[in-house]
Length: 571
Figure 1 (cartoon, rainbow, N blue to C red):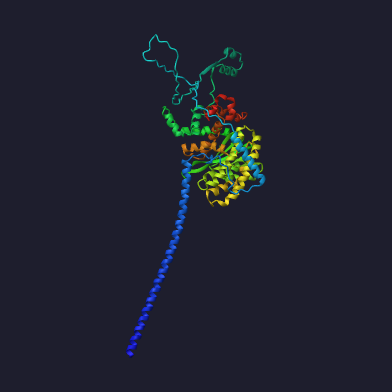
Figure 2: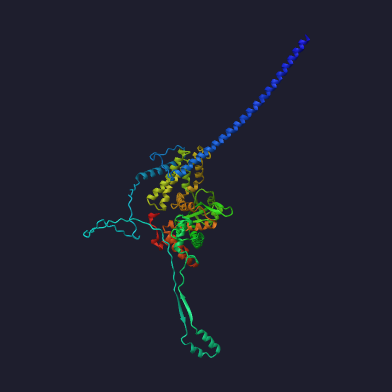
């Protein structure tokens, strides 16, 4: 009995021990499973976070790709045309305006609609082939009919004129100056010797009585560059081809080589430096005249410049200032900097209205006494155009309101209003529309996606709204600074041709050339004739301070050379 009890106890102990071991193994396995689950959950969270991050990055890249496709492959015009021009705008945005403001807006819109309906339609002119200019040389080519007989009588000539072309001609200007000798002798030197009493006087008289030949030769005409064989017309052609037609010097050298004229690149660069130095005083005179006006537009654009220390091109900036009323412009380069201190130093003496884009460097002029800062509606419109794919409804409304402002400008232009009448029209029609648009911007901002294009467009426009609305104060002011952007366009085209400037000095010389040739374009002056004449006269003006260099600027030069202007339809 005792053995049976002991066997039973041992069996129970063995079962309990086995149970404890199984329980321990189960606990260990549970811990492993829980750790694996936790690890899987943590890994799953990381994967979800990474996927969400990549989704945001993919959406951003898709947005950028759509913008670039629109930028490079879609229409470039910023003019917005609604899908249905007859559909009137519904106040879906909840714009809250005062009753008197609402009445002013309705009256303005009613007047604009009535004007559009009653505006006389311009007849579309048919294309007509213009006759070839009479001053061109004619090479007559007579083609007789086959089998011509002596008894045939000519009753007329059927003439057909074809415009042909020959490569440009280089020629040598040979200046020949004959030399003449004039003999100077005494009438009777022996009598003078006899009359001299002293021996020293006789010797001196004999020396003075010797024939002394005097050489007479005409003085050299004034040349642009001393000790250089480059004429004014050649320098004008080189500068005009590079900075007006955007042909780099190495291409021009290749063109000269085709007519068996070889010019080293170092020689061309030396002529360029000398020409720029020659015109620099005229450039500074132009700058003084532009900054003396009371309404200017300012903008800046990039230009690649070689950094000789890093041996690569750096992104530098060229500043542009345009006198709107005189339609004169100059470019300014200050070591390629875009910093605020550059424009502050450049415009430190200016008093009047300055029209710019939204670059933060110009905000300092909000506090400067005697300066009125104006904005650019074209930049604001561009922001809303870019947001059409993101928020079509809101962007269409904003573009429609901006279009009404330009409709007012078109109305004033069609009626040939003067500046005072244009200002009154803006006050009556454009200002109420701008007031309502400003309130809509505030009301619609919470409905936009943070960081989205529509959000950026509204914030940009609202932050600059005071500048944007000030153009209605004076009929001379423009609603945008598209005029100066058109002036900068040759710089953008040129840097695609010659790619970069060799150093800061070359960029400063380019600013001189772009400024003066830009004034030729705005004044409808033939740059070839202007440069040729100025290169032949500028040395005289630089050495004689009684002469005013302003007489050589294109707008003044044109008054004395009326035949040297471009036809109006060639712009």
